[in-house]
Image (cartoon, rainbow, N blue to C red):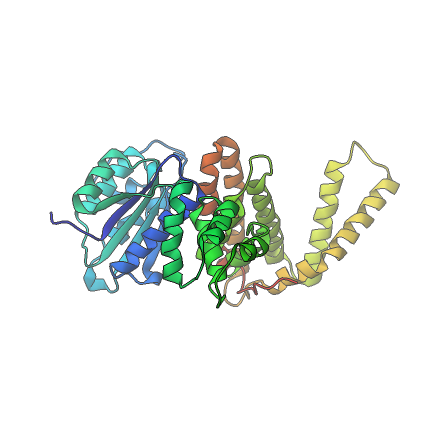
Length: 391
C-alpha cells in the first residue's frame, strides 16, 4: 500500500505534562487541517481508560461489535467514501488505552482507508499499541512530542516571537521562563496576550503582567460547556489543571461544580413552573440539611433548618433564575427527552468522580477532558445558548 500522509500519530513521553499534551492535540488538529479537513469535519474520540462491563469480543467481520460504545464512531469515519461529501478527520485521543481487539480492528480500518475521504491524527501517552504503531509507520508517520529542558525553551520562544511579531529581548524571555517554566501551552497563551503590545516587551512588563499564573475558575469552563464550545472548554480545563497540586483537589472541585449545576438543571426540566422549581430546590436543600443533622431533631430545630433552607434558596435566586431561563423550550425538545438527557449528563459526572478515585493522578486529566467534551454535547439537549458573561 502506498504511503498515506493523511495518517499521523503523536506520542507524549513519560516526562510530558499538560503543556506537551496540549502541544500534541494542537499538532494533531493542525495536521488534519493541513491535509484538507475543515475544522467542523474533525471528530474527536477519546479512548476510555476503563475496560467496560464485559469481556472484549473477538475480532470479527462486524467491526462495530469490537469497539466499546464510546469508540463505535471510528468505524463510519474510517469507512467513509469521497463520493459522500467533505473529507472527514478523526482525532483519536489516548490511543494507549485501546484494547487488543480494538487495536487489531483499527489497524484493519487504517489499512483500507481512503485518503481522499478521511484523515487520521492519533495522540497517545507513553507509547502506541505495538500493532498500531507498526501500521502507522507503514502508511503514515509517528512523531514524539518531546518535553523541552529549560536550556532549550529559549530557542522555541524565539521561533514563536518571530511568528507572532513580538519584540522581546533575552531578559524578558528569561522572566517568562522563570514564571512559566517549560510549559509550552502556558507560554503560548502568555504570548497571545502580549501580541497586542506595539512596543518592545521588557522583563518588568512580564513581571507586572503575569504576577499570577493564568488559572481559570471552574465557572469559566462551565460557561463554555453551556454553549457547546468543547474546544475552548478543554483549553480552559488545561489552564485550570496546569498548576494543580494533589493537595488542592481541583479535579473534584470541578466535578462538584458540574454536579451541582446539573442537579439544578435536571430539577428545572422536571418543574411545572418557576415557583415550583424554587420550591423543589428549597425542599432539596432542607432534605440535605436534615440528612447531615447529628441525630433526631425536635420541631424547633426543624423549623430553624427550614428557615435556613429558605434563606439559602433566596440568596441563590439569581442563579436559579438564570438556570430556569436557559431551559430548552418543550416545543423543541419534550420534557421526558430533556430529563433523560440531563440524567445521562449527570451520570457522566458521577462516573468521572468514581474513576478519579480509582485511578492514579496521571490519568485524571484525560478523564476530565473526555467528561468535559461529552458534556459540551449533552448540555445542548436541555439548555439554550447561554451568555459567557458573569457579573
